[in-house]
Image 1: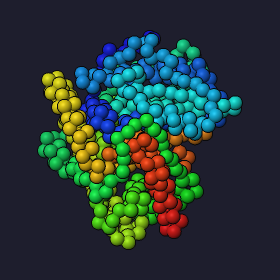
Image 2: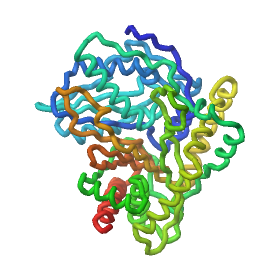
Image 3: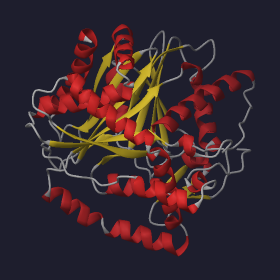
Image 4: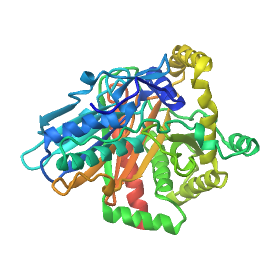
Length: 446
C-alpha cells in the first residue's frame, strides 16, 4: 500500500477500560454490527478493495490490541487481507445476526470484519467492529467510509484515500479552553455512583450461544410516537428509556419501590473545540438514570420522571463534564503512570469476576440509542441503492444487558445482544417485545 501507517498507536482510557472492564471480567462482549441491505448486486472485488483501504485510512482499524502494553500494534499488510467473507445467503436475517454476534477478539486481527450475503438479485453487507476501538457512531461511520471508497473505486480502481493519521482519539483536547475552576466545578457535579438494582436477571456463567433478539416499530407508528413525545417535551431517547424501564418491571415482575439504575449513553463529540479532527474512536460515555418503581404508575408518570432526569443532565452540562473527566484521566494511560494504572486494572480482574459471581443482584440495563442513521452517509453509488440499515449493539452476559436502538427512514429498530447459554432466550425476547408494546400502546392512546 502507498499509505504510510504508524507502527503503533496509544491505547486511550476508554479503549483500555472497555476491554478490561467488560470483556476480560466477563460482563459482556464489546462489539457492534451494522447490516446494510442493498437493492442490487455488489461488485465483490471492489467491495473487498474498499474494506482493505478502510483498514489503512483509519489506522486503529488495521491494528491488534495489546492492552497490557497500552498500545495498538499495526498488523503486517498480509494479515489485513481476506477479512471479507462472501457466502450465498439462505436466510439473510439469521445469517447477519449470527455473524454480528460471533465473538471478535480485539487482540487477534483487525478491528473490523465483514460478511457479504449474496442472493440472485440483491446483496447485504454485515460489518462487525470492536468496541475496544470504536463506539456505535464510529462503527456506522466506518460503514459510510466503505461506501465512499466503493464509489471512488468505481471511477479509478487505483484510487487510495488519505490516511487519517494524527486525528484525535482521546479527550485530552476537550477541556483545553476551560479554566481550572470551571473544570473542577463540572467534574464535581457529575454523579458517577453505580448503585445496585433491587432485582436481577437470572444468568449462568456459560458461553457459546451469542445471538440477538430484535424488534421494530414501523414508520407510521414511530412518527405518531415522536409527535406524542414532542407534545410532552420528551425526546425519543426519553421514550425509549421509559419503555425499557416499564418492560423490565413487567417482564421481571419487580415490586413497587424496587430501585432500578439504568445506564444511558451520551455522544461526547460535541464537547471538542470546533474544527477538531477526530478519528474513529470511543467518544461516548455513560450516565445514570435512577428511578424506582411506583405503584400503579402509568407511562406518562414514568416518562415525567425520566424527562426530569434528562433535563437535569442537560441543565448541569454533565455531558461536558463527562468529556472533561475523560480528558483528566487520560494522562493515566501514558508513561510510568500508564504502566501502573494498567497493572491495577488487570490486577482487579479476578476480584471483579469473584464479585460478579457472589453478587448476582447487580444486573444493570444499558440503553444505547444510536439515533437517526443518515442515508446520505451510507451512499454506495447510484448502481447500489441502500434498502435498509440495522444496528446491533454489544452483547450482555448477565451482569449487564443492553438494548440498542437506531432509526432508518423512520423505522425504529431495537435489539438486545445476549448469550443464550447464559441468559434465558424467552426472557430476553420478552424484554424487547414488551418495550415495543409499551411504545406502541402509549402512542396509540396519547
